[in-house]
Image (cartoon, rainbow, N blue to C red; front, side, top):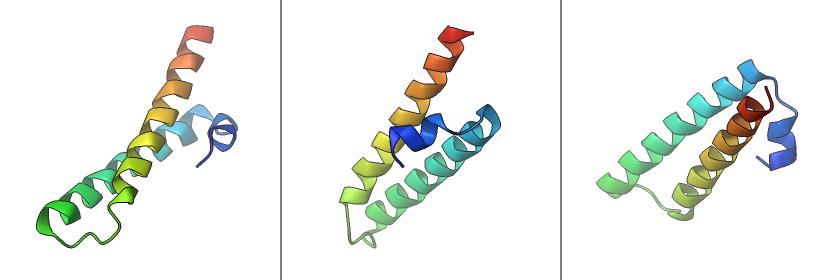
Length: 64
């Protein structure tokens, strides 16, 4: 998800998306540990997505 798409989300949608991204990252880490993950680049892309979401959430908190 791109930053522009994340900024268009409401606060509730942002929280839901963050939860989904964290769950997906956990599942990828589990697959990687068990040797079942084929594309290891997905780990870093999920981690970046989580960071983008958290950054935008913190920006919104500071504006309020």
